[in-house]
Length: 231
Ligand code: 5RP
Image (tube, rainbow, N blue to C red; front, side):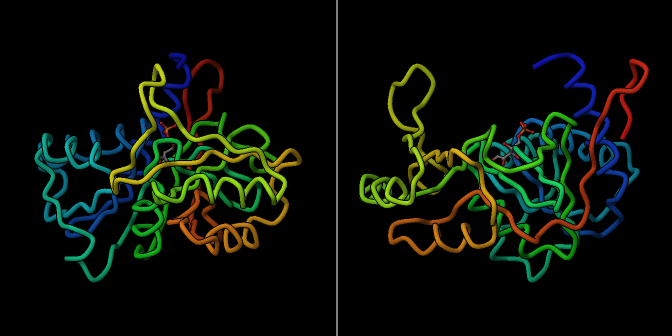
């Protein structure tokens, strides 16, 4: 990742944390941009600029980070509502529909987004696209015992499908829920995200796919202008 992209991510992460108020239950997303946001929140809590915050994490990675920073956490099942959820994304289209799941966390991320009164996305400008899935593969979490069957059904829909492998292909990526991830590409991209989200989730063996449709309240975009990051 370039230094410029890092600076854009820092800028949006800070801007998102500025929306957090005392006493809020906050959904803490996953990925590198969300991690910067969690760090910025931890710093504000440490400095006494915010109090009474409870975080609800969307990944094991986020849980470890938040715990290390001393952010009080509650399980999704233990809260009845989330005031604000902040998360990154892999692609954002002009209607604010998203592809997420680059970190294989989209099941928990979608649950937290759905529970949130307000869902804010933090991305750098490289994530903005005209049409979804032309650049980034669509993640689909599947039961381990069904991955071939689901792959065949997705292939029959006209897509190409790969089982996500761990770095150096030592084995498949396993999600926090113990499942596998198929990465799916439609050659012409995705024209109707809502219909495709429902169709894929209707395949037996699918837990959830990475299309986030009509969930987003605000997208904060980090850009570089005259060499400086701005939101
Ligand atoms: C993880 C996600 C992430 O939010 C997404 O991959 C963006 O990550 P990053 O901020 O590192 O680019 O959906 O499942």
